[in-house]
Amino acid sequence: MAKIYSHSRISSFEQCPLKFKFRYIDKIRLEITQTIETHLGRTVHDTLEWLYTQVQKAKVPTIDEIITHYTQKWEENYNPEIPIIKKEFTVKDYFNKGVEFIINYYTKHQPFDDNTLETEKKIMIDLDDKGEYKIIGFIDRLSHDIEKDEYEIHDYKTANNLPMQEQVDNDRQLALYAIAIKESVGEEKKVCLTWHYLAHNKKICSNRTNEQLKQLKKDTLNKIKEIESATVFPHNKSILCNWCEYKKDVCPVWNNIVEDKETKQEELDIW
Image (cartoon, rainbow, N blue to C red; front, side, top):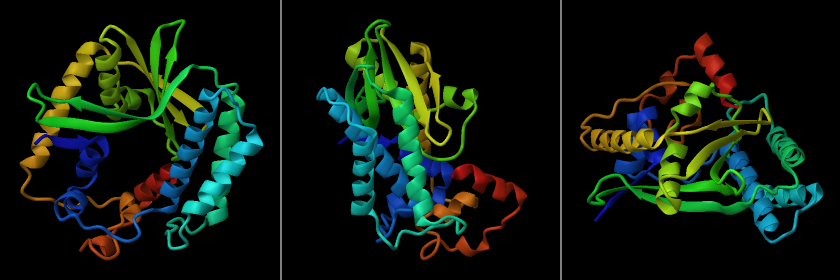
């Protein structure tokens, strides 16, 4: 049977091996796993997916219709037990931030005529010739620029951080998705990786050569084998621990987090 990994599963190990062990080896599942940030992100993603689904039906919703959809989804999925780590913000602050994201995106991209093909497109690629290791993922949105004959993979980000170009040029997730698209439409086709940083109302693009994508498959497979060969799973204390679902009741080191100036700056970059 093939071993199926995701970018988030690999990233979990890179972020904190102990967290990886709790989630994927010990399979500890907690009742509350969301944070207010993930609730915001999922609601915004759902709203933009609904927008482009309507566009594909030849109907462009009004901004009021989109905000109504966003509000309904927020209320449907909101759990009062969801923790708010940054105490200087309220639930209303996060809700309003999402409204701002959507209004800015709508204003900038209407009438949404970039030939969207699919939303939440599932992809699966083989990392090895035998198909023993696979990567699964979901593309937020896939479009096709007919004039350029270029496919575009779109990803929405609701966090506050804005990476440098060098960082996105080394991003693994969308590059893996590009491999799947090229396997479907042809290796010679151009695929543009596009991130929408909604907190900044900014779009950042990146491209990969076929050689880079081939190397990425090798590197990703090597990382997975490194994970599988691990026998110790050390903790990695950082500001991200504040958003970890295992911090309070499971992780033995959660109350030893050291806050310093560097940590506080990381916190500012997260939301």
